[in-house]
Length: 410
Image 1: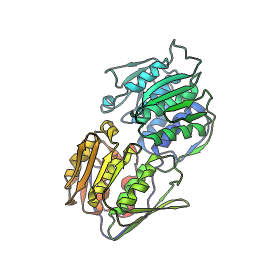
Image 2: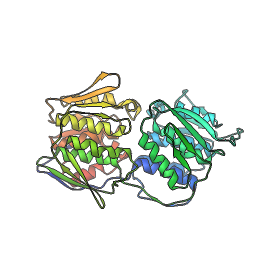
Image 3: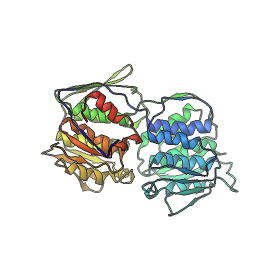
Image 4: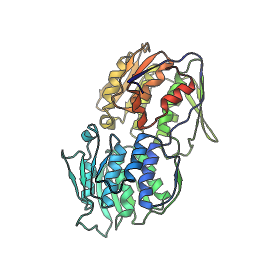
């Protein structure tokens, strides 16, 4: 793929069927749990780079160095998985990954008796993982206290190894708990594979009952669906898109896009094989807390600005430590279209635009797949160029193919 692509919409409403990737979040959790459970079949696994990377690394039991590249779930889930399986391995990643903190997870695993050393900078990858070593695991239930506002991936990583601990695991969560739906997803998948675990609010418990082999079919990805919601909202002369593979009763927190987009101009109808999206009039200004669905923030910021709707956005704290500083990236790129994302007070942002215009701007993507896909729907309003379009391989490799199938011109 070239270093940039220019998109344009010829004319008329957006209509048709779009094929979504499978959920990366479900896929990566299911792969770790299956590796601990043994056997069983996982169907409809995501073709996203992060999931394919997880599969390859889990299938490399003899390797003494594993590269998680830029995949946060891979780095965090494997740190816990490799420790509990008593592997001795160097776990590394890209330059950006080596800037993303992991000290909270390492400290927790060390409290469980696992031996992990930092290969370079304290608190950051790469990690020398040495497993239990001479530290025999305790027979009583292990208890850990962790902040609830850390990445839910840390909490999920610890939960998934809970059944492997001789006495099980009890996690005490302090303060505000972020991304709670991802924690619920982890617990639900663990239960599907035979674990005995429960959510008691600020306490999460996992009993020392081993996983059992099971089959599981991965749902389509609601995060990926959010970009099609944006396209339907922006479609000239109305629009309708069918998205197969989505479930009404989903484990994914990003299903919150259904309610958010009702305010931004899209109605959702659940049909037997997925959902049907149709355009409707947007409402006025509103507030939205993204604590439980941070991956939707970029999508919503862009579409709200394009619709001229002021949205107060909270719960964005984790966006600073993603593939890029997503808040800064959004502020820079939105300004090119006449929009602003302003921090009105600590951790309270407002997106607004009065003279939003798409007229051939070039969008930088900052090595971030969601920047590319959040801004691409603006091509329905006018031509624009997306730099480094290949970044979508991280979660939605066929994104540009699907846009071309839907009628976009490149």
